[in-house]
Length: 144
Image (cartoon, rainbow, N blue to C red):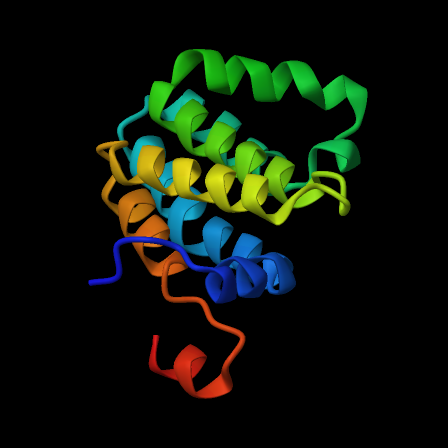
């Protein structure tokens, strides 16, 4: 298994950030939300069902009146808070000043992966491991 991110992987991750974010929502957030939702009381499940879209939406696209709903969900479920915060952290790395040094982005992504892999959330751990295999090379990207 590949242990470290390299320059090619970081460039591919930055280049494919929208695809990666969609994968994160599909492969991490939605499964965890559904799993947690199944453990909730029926009235909580309805609230979660309505809030699911809010949790996967770009924060700046969430209207201010919806923010308390998100906070209530995050305050009541540590696992959902964790995957939500990891999503926000990953997006923050991409949003760093384009002039930021490459080495800083590399370090931030490696730290993000390390934390995600130690989260205890299987789908988040797997997602982080898969990030290490992103490549700009079409042959490598297909084999990942």
